[in-house]
Image 1 (cartoon, one colour):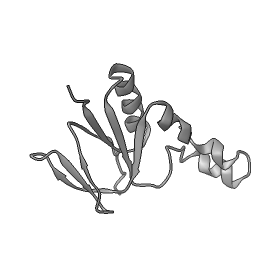
Image 2 (tube, helix red, strand yellow; image 1 turned 45 degrees about the horizontal axis):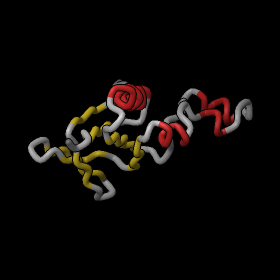
Image 3 (cartoon, one colour; image 1 turned 90 degrees about the horizontal axis):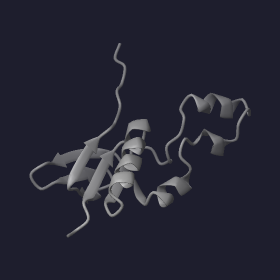
Image 4 (tube, helix red, strand yellow; image 1 turned 135 degrees about the vertical axis):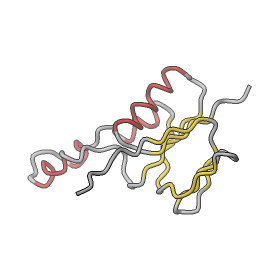
Length: 113
């Protein structure tokens, strides 16, 4: 039996928590997290403390790069711009095409005026 390919769009709290939960429940699954930003998960409020030199830039990361290796999560940088549910493919703005068996869209919300 082939490993399930999990694709999570969003590298924030919801996406990373989902990846960790999936790994704890499916040790053989292939987990990919798509991040629109070229960084591991970080605390946006913590950036102010970095600017004030109260913490180091490394301390702003909620998940260190090693976390992705420890949980065997592939982190892919790019913005999801196309979804084909019939073929189970997601296209990124960098022209990468990612296949999936299970998809979670965890991109958060934006405030609108």
